[in-house]
Amino acid sequence: MAPLEQVEKCARLLSRKSTDDEKFAGLLLLPRVIDAQDTDAWTLIFDAMDIRFIERLMRTGIKQADEQRTGDQALLNIAVSVIDVLASHASIATNTRMLDRIPTLCTVAAMEIDKVSADAISVLCKLLAHDAAIDRVLHDSSILVQVVDAASKCSDPRAIAQFLDYALNRGSHYIHTHHDTAVARGWAAVVASTAEAFAKSHTVLKFELIAALANALEPITVDDAHYIDEQSSCISLIQSVSSGCIFVLKQKTEATQYTDQALVLYSHLTRLWPHHVFVGLVHNATHAVHQKEAELALRLACVEGQSAIDSMMIAPPDSQADRMRIRRGWKLSVCAEIAAAWLEWVTRWLDDQPESTNIDEASIYNMMNEVQKLASSVVNFMLDWKERTSERLMLENGADLIVSSVRFLALWLATDPKMHQAAMPILSMCTLWIVHSPEHGATIAEYVRPCISFALETCGISEAQYAADLMTRELHHDRSQAEEFASPWVGTIEFDDLARAVYSIPSDEDMLRDRK
Image 1 (cartoon, rainbow, N blue to C red):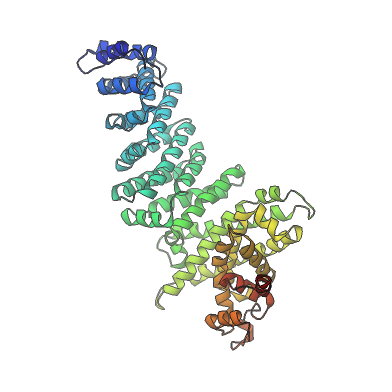
Image 2 (tube, rainbow, N blue to C red):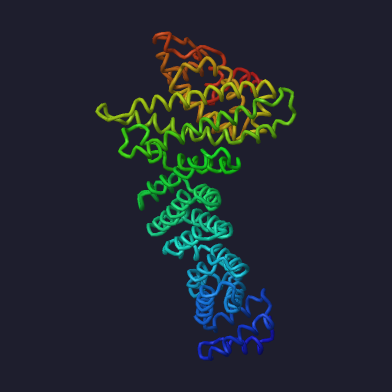
């Protein structure tokens, strides 16, 4: 710690009883006397100082900057540099008197004053690393909404967009562990404001905010999303994000990275709020624009998924760079998640509707056609992939792609037996993954189980009886339904092996091995 006498001298100069000139002299003396890492000394200074004096310096500096942008920024430099050091110490950063400085720091951060604004952003990130600061800005959402508004007016919004990226992501992690009405409403207000800026902007800000919004939604779970929507409707947020994503997806001349980011962002919407995203597709929607946007987004996702498959299948069969090939088509997993979200939601929604519901059957039929094309392509791609390598290497090199593709195909195959014949080889692949993958086997088993139930149902076979027959090795496969509707899976060795893996019934090989 610095000599106590010098620390106490600075503390007296910065106290509430000293004059403004003495306080200013104390601020200039601080960096010469106290090391920035000396927590004890800075805590003593903070406890004694008149923090409102630093607030006044910042406000005066802001006023001067507004009057002459290229003028001397000495006051802002001194005030922000001192707060920067204070924010580096956790015990000080979480103090209410420090948190009260956040609104003014946000104003400085958005002013585009070279080093000063960058330093203000650095200070804000240090403060927002603590839950106390996140709680403050979510309880008073106008603080960050003001930053979003300022970003829309910046000539170069990249720095402020990166700050919003960090702030929104921190807020999402916080709300995941703090289900509080005020916090949920604050989060919704800030994200909705950001989404609106994303949708309306025609500058570089639109592309900068894609990642910020995706990182804001990524930590949110389905339960979180439901809770937030109960406290504050997320419909406007969803519509703004959808509109912005569609704009980006339609810009074929733009860099591919933005298209990919837009797909990821849209997939978060379908994961968190599928009803708000898709309901316009099945009703004769009051808002035709929103219905067309939802249709277009799903179509574009299917098209992008097909494009990802094409990019992977053009690689030569003897290619050794399997991981590189899969990385090139990584967005198929995102597109498959979007299509899977649609299938899961629309199936459940149709089951829940009374006969009198006004359903847009033509729209559903059209969307199902688009999804079916993608499902057929995914089946062909997985078979092609297996010919190039092995099931084990497929999962090792592209686990995310495998799991998302299986989920998508399982949802489709659990509703339509027409693709069962083409998908027959995939049964043995799923069996191997379930049996030999401790990390992903249980997830894949959960996804394919409805397919087994559906296949048995098409043949009029009780699933409970079938499972019992599997256990006793007395399979009859009595088909009572019309053959044209029956799944060709039932009665095959591949189907029985998959069912054993899903039901955790030992195979004959396992039983022989155990006996030995």
